[in-house]
Length: 194
Image (tube, helix red, strand yellow):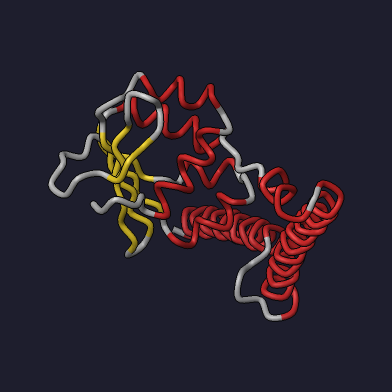
């Protein structure tokens, strides 16, 4: 490790410094190392006594390994609770619980940082536009998924709708009952004739 911190280390520490409670929580885990595997990207941090992190030394034992699918990143960024359950964590359970808590609750106040560069009013407007764009894109994805589901179930039934499946099951049940009634009639007719 050189004299300058790794960009990921700087970014994580920047967010941590803005949330002193998060640093207090991490102090209890000083000396422990967490590895993050996001697709092919791998990085590891060791918690310091200050509550900040530093890039882990090569060969340092990993107390916790966190694996995140790259496809999960947009859902995590949107704060989707179900996405957090899809993160794989192996290792120290107490540290895993802390990392999970911080991932769910720690947010970068980009508007505050932006205000230092462009001023409060411009930062507020830019942040509002970014939030609006994020809402719009999330809504567009949701509507696209609904449209695709409707197409697959109504226009080009690659996937059977619940109503069609229930109707088919009911018809199979009625057919089975009719066959059983026919079998009983045949048995009675054979007994009568035989």
